[in-house]
Image (cartoon, helix red, strand yellow):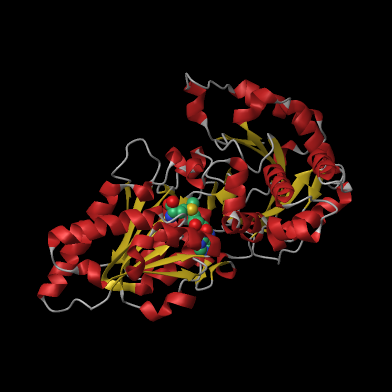
Length: 500
Ligand SMILES: C[S@@+](CC[C@H](N)C(=O)[O-])C[C@H]1O[C@@H](n2cnc3c(N)ncnc32)[C@H](O)[C@@H]1O
């Protein structure tokens, strides 16, 4: 049996002390009491810092190696360790549950082929990037007003630190001063184009755009070279509702702002006309909100993590009572909610929902209840795994094939967005992105990096080394630095620009 205890620093924590015996002992006891082949079990312990998340305190994850299930036969590397099962423990919650009972229950449900798991699936197994949790995420942004009205809380309050660093005036000013320095140089050589393009992906309520535009106008007044007159600020988001909000926020700068409904994972579809023209692409807290898979190297083999969203059966019973439905109708109501949104769902199903407020309540309760089952499925080869439409899984090789066991996010949405955005940059342009990046692969061995829930949205940390590697392959320098204008934040600033 292998035990991977990731949050080891907490063993010495004064504030939230934990012990190996409390968090691991009951699970190992339950395993010993079962008929499981202990030589083929991994036990992993995480500290899941997100209070709202997709996990139970104890989870069981089947490990499907080559030759079984739907996986193509593949050459088996010498010396691989073929495990059958992973038991995952959320150490943060270990005091609140009987881990031994939970482990017994999970093992017997597994032995029974999952029939007695108490899980009501919302979908079939699939790569996590295709799970319906991303439909919930998109719904949140498209019906943000209804959600915020129900909670009385703005989405920014759920971000790290309770507000978006995108609103930081010092950060905006230093960015603008750097832009002006580049433009002065180009203007002196008569090489500055007439239109000065800035693109923002994922604009939220528009506060980032407003801070940037207000500061820009003020700095330009002092600088005196008329850059504000030439500025074209393009706000892009996939939620028309969010774009409406943002347009209102920057109404004062309307002549310099245009807005585009676009999927940040495919910016070229709308912005292709800007190739080599954009001086600044500005992104904050968006990459962590784009669909992602996780890939793992376990015992010498590479696996894709597949997921299946489900609702716990007792939560289904409660939801059914809430909307006067039978428990077996809840799955279909959730699917309809994701397709139609709460307002239309209320119209389509008046017998269950008395109006939009009831539909929002149903949405919030269903979202809070959603969990993910996971399993590992051996990858037939990294070259056969599509990381993004133009990026093969080969890009992962230097990161996952270090020899040691590791599980990491591969941020498919962010990688796709990044590689389609780079060609938009002017040779002196830059992509600046504030987000929660993992810049040291070792951090995947000691910390939980998602998924978590921020209100109605999904959050996963972003694999900084992977983006840097992909960017370098395309001739860009990609650097990371702690966000310079607020202390005590997890936010890191990524800068990508054409290599000198
Ligand atoms: C957490 S908010 C960040 C807003 C703002 N940049 C900030 O820092 O406060 C994420 C934003 O990204 C947008 N978004 C998420 N996924 C997207 C996608 N696939 N395409 C375009 N926009 C997306 C959401 O609609 C939302 O406006």
